[in-house]
Image 1: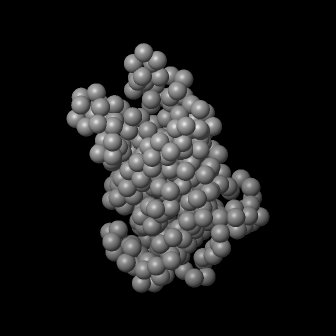
Image 2: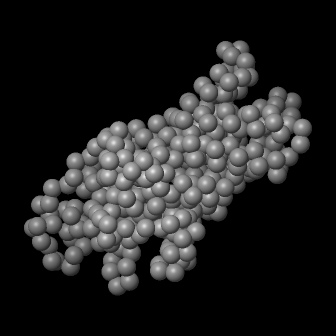
Image 3: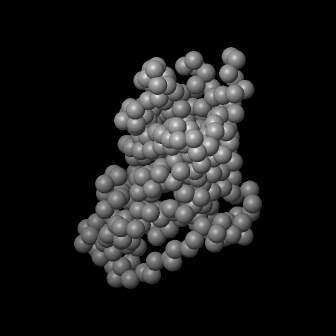
Length: 318
């Protein structure tokens, strides 16, 4: 039963991840809006001026930030300047990430759910659902972090000037290049954020889905069919988006930053990134990319759970 849960969760996650990849790419590009493209040590923001050893230049401080644009404009801009194929930049990393991260979290959640479900009622208390999600999400994120870093970089590459682009050819090339040029430790850059986000997403997403599905069935609103699965999964996607977006923004920026030997990194860590982001762009910067996040998280969660329910039916005799 344990291995079966990993297989079912992995298949559903890979299908969901690939089908919603363009929306995830647009979300990443939007989360990086307002951040200087002058890697590795952006100084366009006033909040960074005090890190330059007193050499404060009015040119940097007064530079006008680029205006933020919406998801449709970002998507059209990618199509115009990079082509339709660019919407699937980093899809190989998505496949690897879902194989490592989502397969692990879905499988572990299923194992814990089986152990903690009340045999008499067939249900698991909400607190235990949340706890199972936190544990499964944290472990899954730690396993999948290298693929997550590669995916963020490959998705963000097109927004950089041509000379600054990394031009990874695949997720294998991305991981190999990072390990050679920046050290093996770079593959776990932002891992604390990845783990925190995954714990929040998994706990809110899986626990919400199970809880809402159980409520619908118990109250007799709908039967255990497609309508119930879609309703519960979309609601779970909304909850997960609201809970995880701030951590996701910081994670994206920390993973995407370039670090060169002898030069200070743009951010010393997650807290530093959060403080600089809020100072320079305001608190709502932590919800940048929320529309594409919910636009992606909603369909992703729907495809994930609808596919999962179908895969379970197909594999019920195994």
